[in-house]
Image (tube, rainbow, N blue to C red):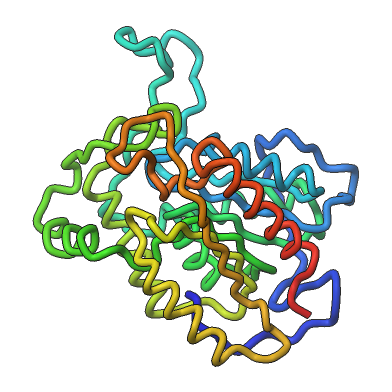
Length: 314
C-alpha cells in the first residue's frame, strides 16, 4: 500500500520506475481518438471513481489531466453504469431519470470490480499505443487501483490517490467490522453524497464489504514501488488520517534515497462549506473539484500536483 518495496530497474525518462509500454485490442468510449498507429500522448491515467459515485463526478479532475496533455480513460465499476438506453426502457415513469445499472452479485468478491480496471486499461492501450499507464483513484477507486496494480500484467508508472480509505476511522471501522458480516448484503444504507454525484439513492452493505476486502488485500500484498501523490483532508469523515501520517513517517525513514518523493502527501488545509446539508457544513471526503473541496484547496492541490507530475522521482 504505502509501504516501500523493492524498486524495478529503469532506463531513464520518459520510462518511470516499474513501468513499461502497454498494448491492447479493444475499443472504448472516450472522446479522444487514436492518431493512426501512434499517439502523441505519452502517459494515460485510468480513472477509478468511488463507491456509489457517478464516474462523471470526476470530470473536473479529468479536465485537469487532459489540459496537461495526459490521456484519461474512465473505468466504470459494477453497479455504476448510468449511460441511458434507448427509450422508453431507460426512463423511469416516476422520476424521468435514466435508470442506473443494478448492484452486482457481491458474493463474487473483488474479481468483477478488478475486471473493470482491466477493461479500461485495454481500452487505453488501444487509444494511446505505447503510452505509459498510470492510475487516478478516488476513495474506493484508489484502494481498488492499488490492489489491481499488484496483480496486473501492466505495471503502473505512478498513481494519484484522492481520499483513499486505506484504513477507516474508529466508528466506521467498528460498524463495518462488527455489524456488516451479520447484515444482509442487500440491506440499503442511505447515501449522504449530493444527488448529482451518486448513482443510487442508497449503498448496500455488500458494497461496503467490497471496500473492506480491498483494503484487507492491500494490507496483505502491497504493490511494488509506485510513486504516489496522496490527497487527504485532516477532517475526512471516513479515513484514519493518523494511519496515513504513520505511514508517511515510515516512508520517510525507509524509502530509498533515489525515490525521495515516492509518496507525496498533500493535505487540504482550508475548511470549506458545501451547498448541501451536513452537520459540519460539508463532506470533507468529497474532493472531486473546486465546488466540493473549495477553491483554495483546489488551487493548492492542483499546483502541487502539476509540479509532481512534471518532476517524477529520478
